[in-house]
Amino acid sequence: MNKFLRKKISANFCSIGRKFGILLFYLSIILFFLFIPKFLIFLKLNVFSDNTINIYAFTDIISSQVVEEFEKETGIKVRLKYFDTNEDLYAKFKVSRGEGYDLITVSDYMIDLLRKDNLLQPLDHSKLKIFKNLDKRLLSKYFDPGNIYSIPYVWLVLGIIYNKDEFKDQKVDWNSVFRKPRDLNYKICIPDDELELVFLTSIYLFGRVKNLTTSELKKVETVLIEQKKWIESYTFAGSIYFLSSGAISLAVIPGNLAKKIIEENDKFEFTIPDQGSLMSIENLAIPVGSKKSDLVYKLINFMLSKKNLKTNVFEFGYNPANKTVYNLPSVKFMKSKMLFPPDYIFDKLHLIHNDISLKKVNDIWLKVRAS
Image 1 (tube, rainbow, N blue to C red):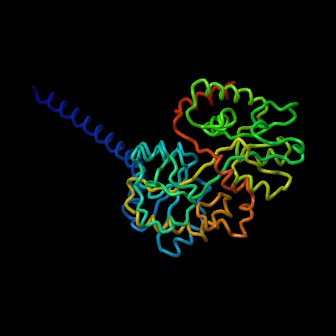
Image 2: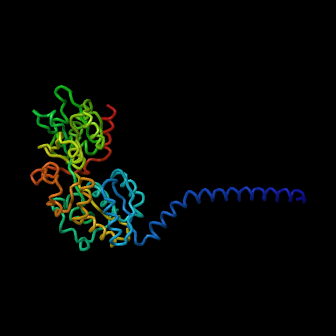
Image 3: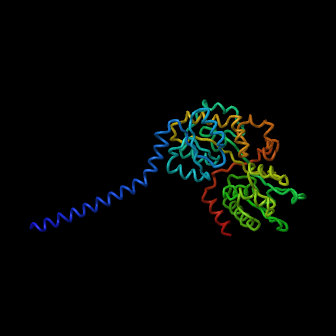
């Protein structure tokens, strides 16, 4: 090989090396900016936060005032991150196993899925001093027998709110929601949650939410498709605007939202139909990977105390799990048997179960929305 050829080959290798080096440099910069935020979050959550509790919660369930008082009293820092639905939390936890979180708020049926997937830590009841004050009606339900993985925090019931003037001579129940109005002179709002819709319809049709057959689910689908003709909107929060404007005469909403509406306008009434309804128990649970359970127990006891749960009740309107709050004279809604149901109504309330696959529920919902 002559000298000129060797120099040319050497120059080509140098050129390739420089290009590869430049490419590697820019690739390193890109990777740095892509992953440094995640790395910093990891450090923030796991290395520099020995005295910090990271909570993953619904947006309207934990009072910032209570959190501030806890931080002031204990010196423990609390960081809150929010999610919209139980399904959002479940999807995230299936991938991350809840890494970086120490406490979550989660609904009954989702506790059932999380514990079966080994995504929750067993609770040490000896560290939950508040446990003796909890409403026994909320304990040891199907989703967590013995409350091994969860502790009830607040609860609510779905019912019907309606304009009293427009239903003077009519009994308001599930027939008012699921049967065709006599003259189609009123429209309604119902939840945009497909699980709640399917189970409410099954209560109306069959008086139960479990062991539904394929043919019964088909009837549920048929009723919801027919019902769509007098639906103004599938919404919870928006119901207040439709009601106050007179666009609708009744809506299916949770009791905490009904309280706010009735406080602002006494022409509305809230009822739980004789056929029964759905209730939801919102719980506190510790993700399996948390290493800060001792701090978390302090927070749980603090949040569920009489004083702090009362603050939360006034702010968001949920029914408290701590029975010592029940007799406070200042909590007016607890005198309402519909907003705060006694045993004979409570016994007619159903929890969402997981014996119907989400795929079947979603299939029904898609057919309803496409009809």
